[in-house]
Image (tube, rainbow, N blue to C red; front, side, top):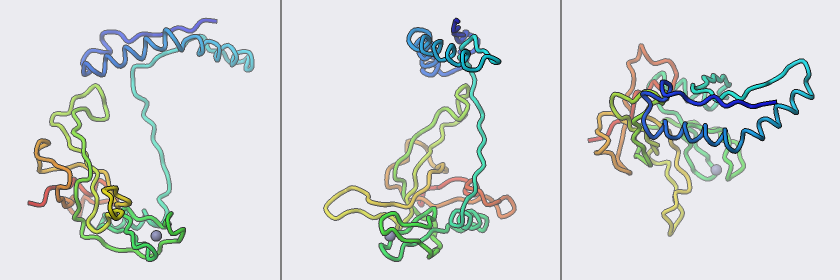
Length: 215
Ligand SMILES: [Zn+2]
């Protein structure tokens, strides 16, 4: 029984950002030095248990797997997505503790109660945290322009504890920022949603094109 490691060839690494190709090379080396023996052992055990099938090689694949998932939304997120179609941001409000959930949730884990009150929010919020992305979902491609991805906390949803900067709760979304240069973005920046046209909206989070600064 042997386990064979296929190394990344120069043509596969070509065109990748340098830091990323270094990471791949290192990962391949780790597999070939340390983990190869444990893989070989696992393969050998598998082959003993399932004689009709046999593995002979460990392949380290240089491409991304494309997994697609389908899940049901539940009532709260269904209403949120329906709202997006009409350029409305829908949340829920726990009447017991007063917290506002955006996206909506149907259960308050603090009060241990079902949340039934739906509210509509004006969409204004603040940048809670952000990151400037130079590489998209395909690590081989550098984005033509860097994208700013931010967590948006909606106005009136932030709850802090007395005498502490700790944010106890904030209803928020992760989304793109637009109409702003990465160097201009700051934590706490006030933003508003920019919507697709009515004909293009389909009840999807991308019905919001991005959040733009309120100037
Ligand atoms: Zn509550």
